[in-house]
Amino acid sequence: MINYTQHIRAKMITFIWDTDFTQSSIWQRYLINTLRIAYLTIRDLFFDGQLNLRSMSLVYTSLLSIVPLIAVSVSVLKGFGAHNQIEPALLNLLQPLGERGPEITTTIIKFVEGINFGILGSVGLMLLLYTVISLIQKIESAFNFTWHVSEERSFVRRFSDYFSVILIGPVLVFTAIGLTATLTNTTLYKAVLGYDFFSSIASVFELAIPYALVILAFTFIYMFIPNTKVKFSSAFVGAVVAGIAWQTIGWLFASYVSQANYSAIYSAFAALFFFMIWVYISWTIILVGACIAFYYQNPAYRSRNKRKWTLSNRMKEIAALTAMLKIAECYYSENKTITLGELNQFLNISSESLSPVIQSLLRARLLIRTDSDPAELIPGKAPDVLTVSDILKAVRQAEEDDVVKITHLPDDDRITFIFDKYQTAAQAAILGISLKDLLDGDDYKSSHTPESV
Image (cartoon, rainbow, N blue to C red; front, side):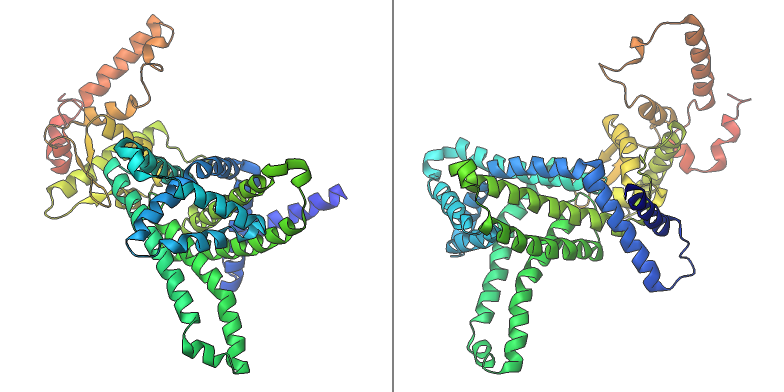
């Protein structure tokens, strides 16, 4: 039986990864790409384990932040007169918990109502907001990991973007819910229910509304949270899969909870037990959707063997020089700037691979990232005084710090002699060449040949 299962698995892997579909129809290519994305998502979820760890981390953060988050949302919605809709929305969100959903909803609402902003004071209010912001930062970190993005938002962007989510997000959510409720309560809508044909359509419409709202919410999350440009089509594909899974698994979970009796084991903690499980399932589904969106948008990552996208030392140096040269060209061009995403496309290197190089240049103050949205890159020094030697030195010494430094290596006179000789020759070859010289073209070559240096 085991050998038969392994044989089937080997056949499937061969079909998915080793079959040539270049001459196949568009539907066959679509099928194979779907199977590859599914395979990679399952691998990342069950075998790599990182998505599971991120989900579990978000469960803990969610438990700490849910009351402050709802409290802030209530304070925002009070200005729109919609704060009374918090409890029905939370009840709907916890519907998969069955009869324990209202119990947990009531407990959370009591905690929220018990918060007195007047007693908290300015310090307490800041701590409340910090708890909410830390939740969003944790979510961004999980999404950035899924999208292979190592660079987080700048402080200014984080402050503005997070508060946009906190202040505008609840308004948009409850506006969508309110419009749906208004539509289903109109006289015209109730009148057409008297006809069998329209009644059937209305039943399908009411069944599809929860799925549509969840898909739209997930699409917004997938496009907004990761610190990279996510195409609408990619976010929508991931949201469709995650939204359908979230609603369907929620219904199955509710059926299970209604029949399970864990009160004898967990007593009063049974509701908390099921609540934590559902939060974990929810975050796992959301991260799986983000993973699908990532692989849909980035075909280069659809590889059977998990690769570590790192550059060799030679590629780092060439990439750093090429990037700085491109940034300097934009710097001297009128009304022309370049973002990190555009630089990735120009160099044909993934953001995951290029990010360490850019970070080394930023730390050395050879490069500056603006606070615009999206952030633009400009030289940290004037190109006529920024030398090639400075750029290469920043990249070569990027990983050295107080813990990892060259003086910790064993001292060997033979190595020191040959390395100093190599360094002296290399420095002499590029002595005095600035970034501006590279921009000027071939003029500097004759005066910087090895014979003339």
